[in-house]
Length: 78
Image 1: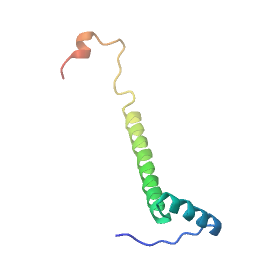
Image 2 (image 1 turned 180 degrees about the horizontal axis):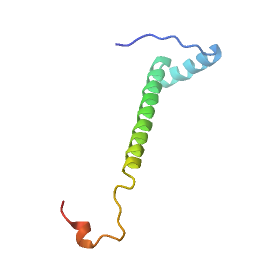
Image 3 (image 1 turned 135 degrees about the vertical axis):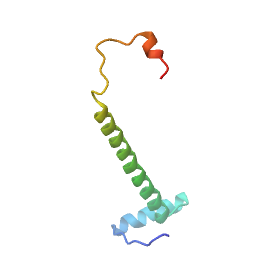
């Protein structure tokens, strides 16, 4: 369920943004929703990358070969 929030910004900036958005057929409210969704998505992407890197770091050193695997070893069914 949507909630109302109050934001503070310079009055001139608000009026300029409203005029620009009106010309584009959108609103401050719609642009804020888009920004909020993008902000959350970016945070989630960063978290996924950090999680993947942590997983790779945890796996580091678990596989060690002192030679290149043979063709048969590379193609072996597991």
